[in-house]
Length: 73
Image (cartoon, rainbow, N blue to C red; front, side, top):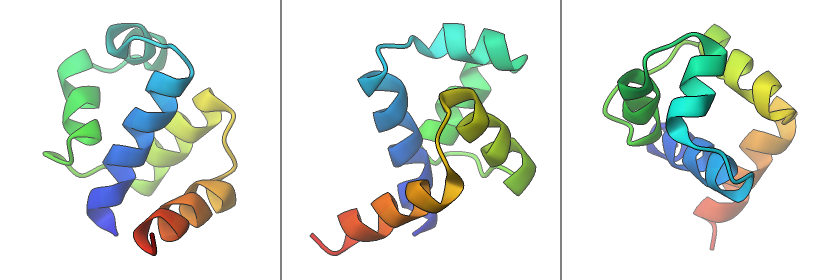
C-alpha cells in the first residue's frame, strides 16, 4: 500500500495537467523531493501528505479508497 501512495500522487498531478516543479514550488519544497515522493524513493509524513492532498483539493478518504480500489484490479 505504501508504494501506491506516491504513484497515486503522480497520477493526480498528471491528470490535473500540473508540472512537478510548479507543484513543488507552490508547496515550498524542492522538486526533487516531490519527485522522490512520487516514485516512492522517499517516504512522506502524514502532515506532508495532507498538505499535498489539500493542494490538489482531494479528500484523503477518497484518495485512499482509490488506492485500495486500484490494488484490487
